Image 1: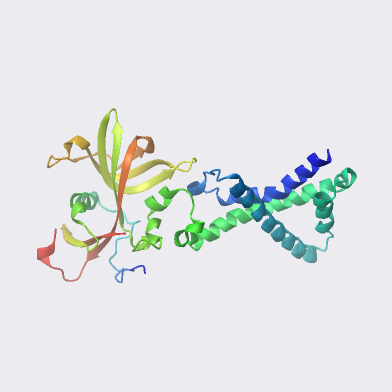
Image 2 (image 1 turned 90 degrees about the vertical axis):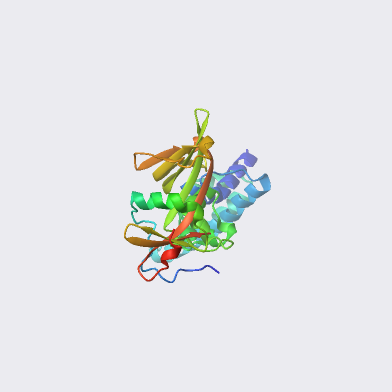
Length: 53
Length: 250
């Protein structure tokens, strides 16, 4: 059964333009991201990221 | 002579099946037509042909009742396919040619429409039977996540991160960045990929701490011919506005 996210309100769409800082941050922490998910801070914002698949 | 003509008639009869198959597989992620064995090829020419003839005949019947014209296909087909008389062939050849052109046109449209239906209803993702031949499309677009054997769904993808190992001038270089675009080749493979905000490093610098260095431009295109392998990861990203555990932040 495919899992769907319940909270789409603050989901960052694939189409959304991401800042270079955000991309670099994800590159830097990518080895630590897993299927369970991690939270990280970038400037004033806090993000939750998890690996799909 | 009669054998040659009947072979031509038979070829014209199965041509709609070939047209249907070509039209169905004409999109960029399924363009390569591989020879899959004589029996298989004959089956996939004859079977769709029969279906296309039935479909075309049904459309003809509807058109006849609306437009009030007279056309009896059974006479034409019985003369062309079952009677070996040259005079009979000559009398119906033009009519049969018109009919075959019409069926081929229907098959062409039906092939494209069938592909659209498969894509709109995502049948190629749900059933292996409908899956198109170019795997790169499914992998790089994230549609791969919709396969029944894979958890999660492509609608959740926020970010596609790729590690690309390339070889240029005898040196192996790793590029890492957001996958923003890709082009599939006409041969059924991959032409190039475009990364946004990429970084790169030499493979031999694997043990160095600050091994990646930034690429000044925002977009970099990497031709497939230079790629040794690709590692792709799909991420779900969400901005947190509720409470969070400060200690668990990366």
